[in-house]
Length: 475
Ligand code: ADP
Image (tube, rainbow, N blue to C red; front, side):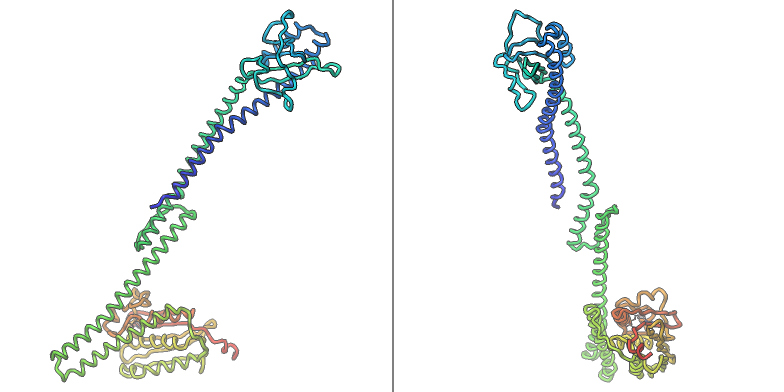
């Protein structure tokens, strides 16, 4: 099975990890260093300005002497962890908190240029070669009477800033590790919640594609994935059910075709080889004829069911008088009824009752129901066909006092090829397709059919029909 989705997620995770690592090890240190340097420079610059305006200024106005200023600046330098200097515009070092006062010795800072920081108020470097390593330097002018007398410079070692930068960076590294671990948890969570169920679903679809419709799988979650899995399971079970029905159907059709064919063949062979003497031929030819009748009926029923299934709702609806159709259909059974001395009693509402339906199909329904009623009725009994109006619908009932249908069989009688055990002896010609056709036709009309039956007492089949709009106009 392809694992691309999972690989993609792992790849995305790795890229995310590498990208975050690069960010944290390159941009973050330089940005932090820059920020800390600027912050430190800010502080030092305000200190330098303060010194320039107070102690150092006093020095140039001769309000204080060098010794006093030195003592004060020394302690301030310790406090600021920096070096404080006072430099003349010419570059002569007047005071340095790092070395004692020596008036004799003139120390010059070569190439001292206070404008070196132009555009900014600090600089990083060895301050004109006067420090060994890199220092952060700020320069504040000492002005009296609008004249620059000298400069206060404060210098702080860069290593000090680097130390605090590193401790801040350590926090970023720890945060990165925590983030990576958290996203790993999300990845594991994703695997459990999405990937594993998805793999089950993919495997199941592969099974279904291979035709294994009975494959079942469980995804225990009530989110969209769980719903998808449940739908897929349901779809497969429906297809499996349809496949089973199909197999059963073909098995039934084959069986129902084979038995009459076997008996026809048996009788014909027996006639040819003389087992059945010529004087008996008529009797057996009649049996053969009966069997071919059965085959014709079976073929017609199958064709009818097939048409109903494929054409679905394609009905030729017209307004017609149901009473007339019932009378005609009942009349066509006259011969059969006479043989069994069965009477058909018609209890019809009104002379004429217009309904809206496919007349040919409804005739078929009536034919099948009356045929069954006669088949399963005892000799010398009465079959009642009744129509009644209820809630703007016409109900047609075909009721017999025959063998009835066992309670357990009631649900199954509508299934294709179903014949109850009771009926098998009575009706050898039955195909078990009649009621399926009836139900299919009634359902196509958007109506319902029901059966009330008690074994040994009789059965009543009732179906509803839509009344024609013409009835209402007449009312
Ligand atoms: P068949 O061609 O065998 O009559 P049907 O689909 O019409 O097939 O009927 C299915 C089964 O329902 C019958 O075999 C019989 O067992 C039962 N059945 C149908 N109508 C009646 C009835 N009026 N009385 C008793 N049983 C009936």
